[in-house]
Amino acid sequence: MSVTDITETVQYLTFKLADEVFALDVAKVREILEITAITKVPQTPAFMRGVINLRGSVVPVIDMRLKFGMSPIEQTVNTCIIVVEISMDGDTTVLGALADSVQEVVEMEPDSIEPAPHIGTRLNTEFIKGMGKVDGRFVMILDIDRVFSSDELADLGNA
Image (cartoon, rainbow, N blue to C red; front, side):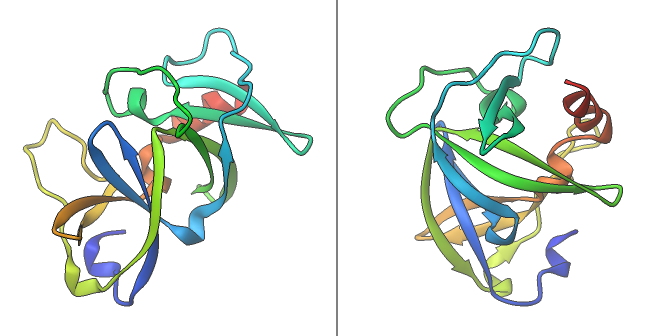
């Protein structure tokens, strides 16, 4: 999905990683959890922190900072897990995205969203739907279905 596919006002959940603000379509967000005990799973990628028990279901937790190549930080009282539904190849997968903090839910009009920057061919930006403006700052709108490759999701499913 590209920014041209955004034709109506959409609500986004904004969250922070370091000093950057990201946004997810609220339709993809199931719930937001306080940080809880995460069970480490051996031989998984570094960005996979482990799994949590969510009402009897095993949910993989991804450290979004590590996934995006940022340095890890210590957890704070604001650290939270955003439980999202990912769609890929017709299947729905539930996973937790570890974020530094959740900000707010904002509405963005289609005309306030710019296309994602094209930064050469070596950098993959297809997981960015667009750049929205909120309070004079740019917010990266993620296409959460494209943040993870099908191979990565298969690895998570096998964990």
